[in-house]
Image 1 (cartoon, rainbow, N blue to C red):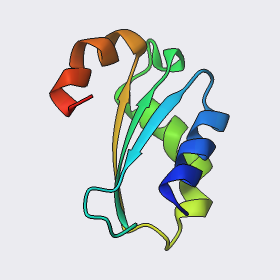
Image 2: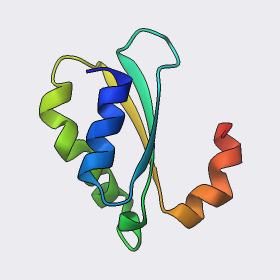
Image 3: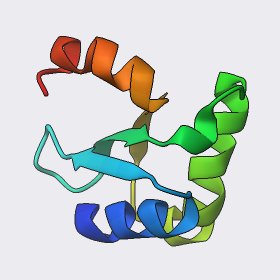
Image 4: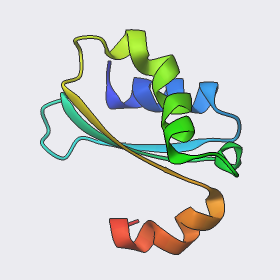
Amino acid sequence: MTPNQIKQTIEAAIPNAQAFILDPMNDGQHLQAFVISPAFEGLMLIKQHQMVMQPLKQALAGAVHALALKTFTPQKWNEEKVKYGF
């Protein structure tokens, strides 16, 4: 699964989501995902991550070695995006 396919899957599964998928090692197997959605409001971090990983579970089986995941509400993203270079 390519980074663009991961982005499309996340954005299709989570209401009003915006996803950024990075491949810092350029190997297609160690990816980073930044996912922003108002659907995360009021949810614990584990629930946010479950919302992202559920639609990816089958697609990522064996294709990606690691996916570092960061989830944000829009307000939290605006506060922290500079810290991540956005």
